[in-house]
Amino acid sequence: MPLITAPAVVTPPDTGSGDGGTPVPLPEIGLATATYTDPAGTVWPLTDTEAGWFTLADGTSGLGATPYTLTTDDHPRGGARLRHVQPQPRAIVWPLYVYGETHLEFVERWRALASAFTRTLRRNADGTRTPGVLEIARPDGTSRRIEVYYREGFEGRGTKGSGRIVDSAVLTLWCADPYWWDTEAVTVHREYGTAAADFLAPFPTVSSSQVLGATTVVNAGDVEVWPVWTITGPASSITFTRQDNGEAFTVNPSAVGHGALLAGQKVTVRTDPPQVRYQDGSNWIGALDWPGASLWSLPPGSTDVTFQLDGAGPGSAVDLTYHPRFETA
Image (cartoon, rainbow, N blue to C red):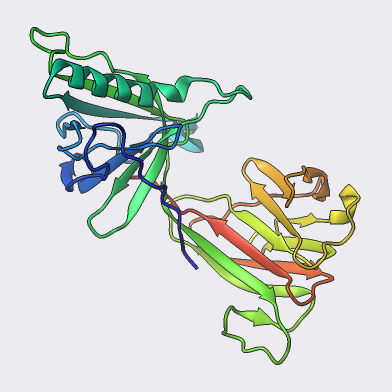
């Protein structure tokens, strides 16, 4: 069951409509619109010529396939064998043209944009940094995103006449994760059912109080994804198994002194980075069956998985959620 998770658009001061604008040709991907969401959550249109700035298609790069480093071993008979493939951070070059009717209007827009991008380098109170999000949308309604940090380029041309009411900046945006992800999340839902339940409505169910379903999950992306699991009680123990390789992990609420989940109580498990949270936000990482727990990923294509709940009853449910990831925008 897909869930749309696009952020609300907040129009910056004196920037026009705030949407992405008319689709324009972008190198490596074709006709598309683009927006940038800064760490504060403000969405800045990048292909709307009425906003006070817009993207210069010439010079845009870094939207194609992910860069890789290959580790090889020399073959005694000549050539080499591929031993390891490591995805590398991506660099996106994004040129912007900024203008204003007056010098002060231009300066206001220039400063606001510079702050929106460089804010990705500022530390939060907990010492972390929040990336911005670059989103590329297609005319068919689909869109993909990637998290970005500002690296360099907001200096202007430095030529005679620039910086008065017009100037351009060629930004380099650094992406720790080089893969693009679909803005539309995929959710697989399984819940407890009785023998009298309709098997197809409202969700696939089974009558067993132990196994909520052996199902096939389809990852339509190019690369593996690391899902988020939400467990709803009642349940005393929950085991998630990937059938093709046998990897599994179990969540045992009693291991953290809680006892079995009661009806309606929820636990969320994130697989990358590993995190287990009870509904009140408390840390339940100790509820996993360490050291044997394997918080497995979903590879591209179809994967058979099983969700098993001991102590299940009416209201018991499991939700698996992920965003497909892709090589290109």
